[in-house]
Amino acid sequence: MADASHNAPVVILNEPQLAENIGAVGRVMANFGLSELRLVRPRDGWPQERAWASASGADWPLNGARVFASVSEAIADLKLVYATTARPRELQLPVITPRAAAGDLAAAAARGDRVGLLFGGERAGLETADIALCSAVVTIPIDPRFRSLNLAQSVAINAYEWRMTVAADAPPPAFRPGDPPADQAALLGFYEHLERELDAAGFFHPPEKTPNMTQNLRSALGRARFTDQEVRTLRGVITALSRGRGKVLEKIARRKAEDEA
Amino acid sequence: MADASHNAPVVILNEPQLAENIGAVGRVMANFGLSELRLVRPRDGWPQERAWASASGADWPLNGARVFASVSEAIADLKLVYATTARPRELQLPVITPRAAAGDLAAAAARGDRVGLLFGGERAGLETADIALCSAVVTIPIDPRFRSLNLAQSVAINAYEWRMTVAADAPPPAFRPGDPPADQAALLGFYEHLERELDAAGFFHPPEKTPNMTQNLRSALGRARFTDQEVRTLRGVITALSRGRGKVLEKIARRKAEDEA
Image 1: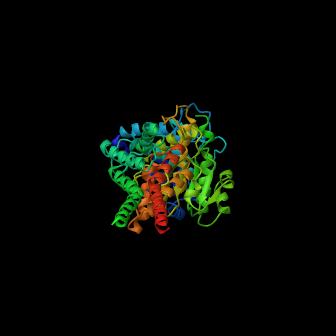
Image 2 (image 1 turned 135 degrees about the vertical axis):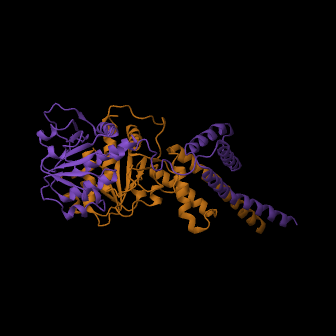
Image 3 (image 1 turned 60 degrees about the horizontal axis):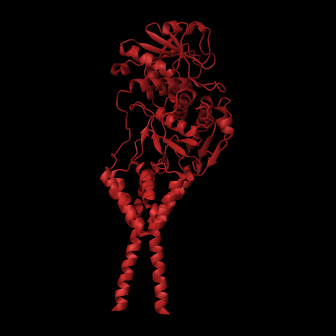
């Protein structure tokens, strides 16, 4: 799927109304590696400064945006186009999730096909005639109690699923950054240190419960999968907490020696 | 998983700046079946009319929003909280995708645990100290060439993954059987107890490193997701390790009194 990321879906907005929303769409496209934006009859014309203002620096999808007079012209060069809409339609088209759509689009893109996602404007959504030009309907699983999804959010979720699909091969940025867990020998040294000090402090009572208590402590602490550095720090914690006792014992011994001298 | 959908994650926004963004967050929460919103130190105070204006009728998350003075107070009653941030941090916390996070949260919610997602404000994001209170970092797979993701988009993608998880009929991902984790208030009490005793023992040196050292300890121990019983046991451990010191001090005082008598 390595090629698919260089062949990301074109985003087509049908009759978008607010320039701010077009800018927000440009921004989420940039967030998820999409770059080609097409506008069908934008209500207030194009370009509009407010779009750039709301794109927060994601200028390139807006700079390259092209305007079309109809959906059919806007998608003419594309091989596979899915229509994103929440409304049930009477068309006999497959209705799929954004996740399934991303899989289909990525497979086509990996073959070299140009692909696209069509979105309706804020008010009117998509006409049945325009949906009929597409190969499937993509429906985001909205809560039926509140269906009004913002245009840029709809693009964001589809773009996110695209990126999840094509970026899945590549190692994600930082899965559990940092150090591996300490080995069992280091862990055991830590547990024994802790248990020695607890025993000295009279923690284990009654004594016959000691094995059970140590097991419970070990399994609770073990779940954290401490790193070597963390084990060293925690041994420092045990020493610090119990050290006072040692120091005071030394002091008693010293004092006793002085008394006896 | 029928129950999980009635126990959706609480959304916590740390220091949100723009009322419009808070409203947009309320709207996407409603889109995906989330309803409980908490605000930590909203910059311009709360309530603000512009939030309702940008929620497009999704009033209930805003109507019920509660304001808190700190992240720790805002998450005190929650059992599992994940921090959403794009930035790599030095904490040793698991870094997971929104999809994996939704699986974890749904499994906990299905058990009856209250769960939450913590989001940083538009400018500052999240402080390391606040992330350290969470059990994992959720990172959206953003294109590294354009990382600036709008706050409401970040909530939308996580809320969408939540809904995809609980709305699907798929069995929940495997989770650790047994007792649920302690809530954040119990954990915080444990951390503060430990830190108090460590401070008394002179563990934190040089003093300027204290915040960093406490964060590292909290994030290391937090990964274990201790149960209530384990937290009680560990507080017993701290008391036992530091008590010796007190007992011996008492002994010294008693001895001194005897010497002087």
